[in-house]
Length: 243
Image 1 (cartoon, one colour):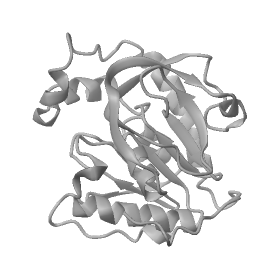
Image 2 (cartoon, helix red, strand yellow):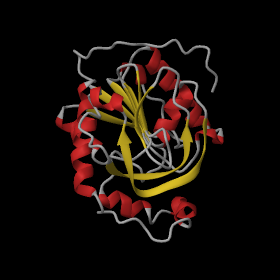
Image 3 (cartoon, rainbow, N blue to C red):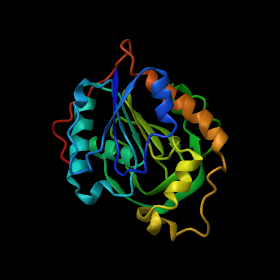
């Protein structure tokens, strides 16, 4: 079985997600549609789709992001599992008809999130403590999609994680990052504007051990949705939505 992963820049990869998928025997196909030589993937036949982060905005009108929005809508109509991380979560929200816009405050670094009461019954989030410190890097947020279930919040940004139906998830924060990824992001030219807002660079190792444990459970539970015996409870008719 195959998982298609949509990346948006070379330096935002799967991190902790990759070994979890590989241990379960999934082949990983990277769909880097931002590259001029990229070929559109056969997404409809994949076990699931993952949409990663990036420094751009879903509102930039980039053609490859519009392509990805159509892939997300197709997956939603087919009840195909989808996981969106940061920019990926915003793409999922926009594909499902929600507004994406500037958050009143950026979150860059380690900040707490709180699971909602619905998270206690969710297979991905039920192991979250009352407060978890996770890594963030975003300046935008989104409205919760219609019929979506809010799973986590923070003081600075209410909509931190959501589920739609049984197999579509969006995470505004980054559980996938390794310390090496965080250190690398702080060196990337594309992130310089964000870093000017900070008094100091985030410590890559601040809560890294707990992040490993959380990512193992969350992404492992999402990978469990990809098997041939998975239960798909909802599909959605999204034909009326506009990019």
